[in-house]
Amino acid sequence: MDESDLIHFGVKGMRWGVRKDGPEGSSKTPRTPEQITKRKENAKKVLIGTAAITAAAGAAFVAYKMQQEGPLTYDSPKVSAGKKVAEKIALQEPTAVVHASRGKNLGVRFLEKGGLPDALPEYERSPLSSDIQSKELFERFGDGKVAARFVDPEGRTDHSSRPISHEVIVPKSMSDSVKNLDDIRKVIWPLVKEQYDEFYQSSLERRYS
Image (tube, rainbow, N blue to C red; front, side, top):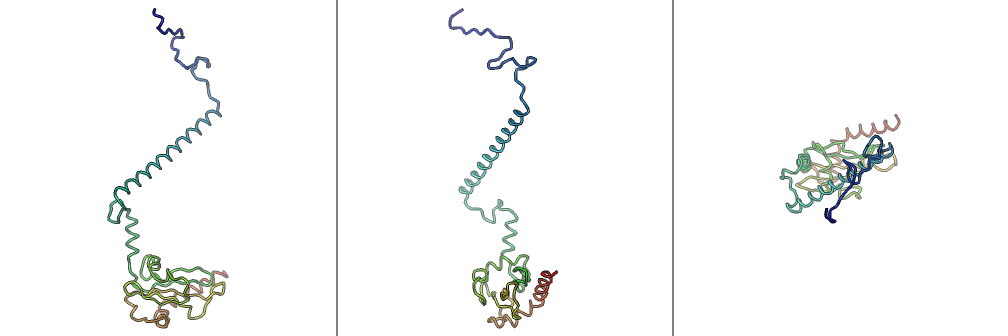
């Protein structure tokens, strides 16, 4: 036997770093319920951390691909169908009067949508959205539409005694009949008055019901 030989005198079946001092020859010391719970909590933390790292890596990859391929367009198959529908709605033109106002005790809302499924995109494109300070407004925009704001012809007020204003968007097909705010009151107001009267009255009843 050479002096460089390594000789280990151990127990048959023994492994390095494993003690056989547990009950019934077990190679591992039994864990307490507290230790088991803590181990599960640690494992859960590891899973959450791994998920966060994976998500961050995914976001970084998407950013990298967008940098390589450039911004996505609505013609791209990667764009969701929802965005296409939203764009289609936003590009629709009103076929009737869009009317927005408030009740005695209710906030501003669209009482007439002008034949649109959603009147908000049209409202946001109009001067009514960009000029919120003027008490009265008459302005042509787009391809001939008219945006107007005027005080309630019957002098009605809200619950804070503020004069109620009406905002309308007149479609191109009707815009030739209005030249100023007086025309708006004479021609357009009668078209929306009845529905507004009902709305205003219902807001009164809701207050005292």
